[in-house]
Length: 497
Image 1: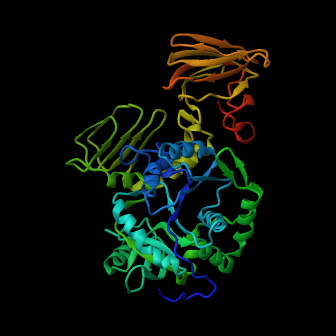
Image 2: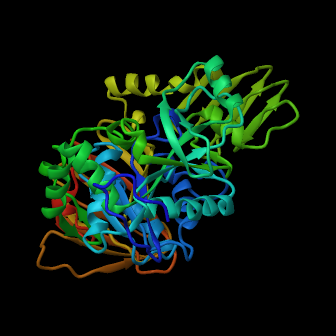
Image 3: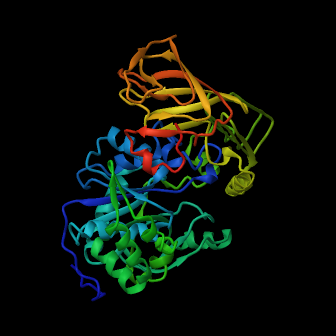
């Protein structure tokens, strides 16, 4: 084993398993309108039939890995929990970041958590919204990087480039057997420079995947970026458990600078880093053109996803959801994305700039900027069908065995009509009398304003209801909760159903 070139970094001991650190933040605005802040791209089946987050979890569930830490925000906690439960990650730890501060404090926080149990623990930090087509090659690269991480290096995985891409950062490496020493990091180049990088054979795309020992990462922050230490340590020290989640302390964690791990540490100190080349069919799906590239085109280089008809079209991507038919005639080089409440049309040259559209919608306070019509909740989902000032109609889907909170409204009344399944209802003007009753398909109940009420699905299949609301105010914050299975009485910033 090679000598540790940095005496301030402890040589770490071998470890049986690697702890994955799965990052599930971000809003995926470059894939709007399919990806939105409330339900971003990592939870969507952009390639294949499973969400990208599910694919990431399965990629690190083999014998090489320990149960993962998943770092996500409060809004996505129940989505993450459901996927982990479905995939059998019983010992996964979900850590809630109270404010977004990018990946530098995330990496340090994960290292501090792991070091509390084993300072020599090896951690693999990876995004949950990337595609890796060749899992075997990915696992081989991870195994090949372990010795360098055990010797005190931070190992970053460099994607072997297959074209002069101008949208990625590049890693320049020295000669030698992998994982190679890093000479420097390069920002996104112009096309001519990118072509020279690729032809040289010594540059790799930076995939944002890193392998390191907990003690290595902590020591590197202590030496080179000490401003993160106290906020991260206090964020953990003051953290509290909420159901199955660990909530980092907001006041402490918010004191962190907002920087990526690359900017805060890796790019500033290439002497710490080793680069492990990887050819595994990687794609970060950072734009709709990337989605087009990873799907099989027809004879005219068109990609049609969903219900779409193309005639006399070339080099065009169509992505249609929610059963919406999209027909295109005589166009080329376009990206067309249709959802239930928004349609995007752009030429491929502007596909990287879709964030501008989202920012404009945000300034206009358009809900389509961040939310779909279908809103997901831990008990299921609801979808707005009709909305006016004095009434609205929703479709509710309640998962088997789940129930909504016990609640009441001040300004609105509700009428529940069961479409399919069986539900159990509490509907009373006396909170001391909460005797439930059952409703079957085609049955209904009326809930006056002020009544305590609760909806539960005692069956083994999802229950579907139509909810008609009438009143002087229909906002989602007109909810007073008496009891909630999901701990949202104290933690839900915007209540919702």
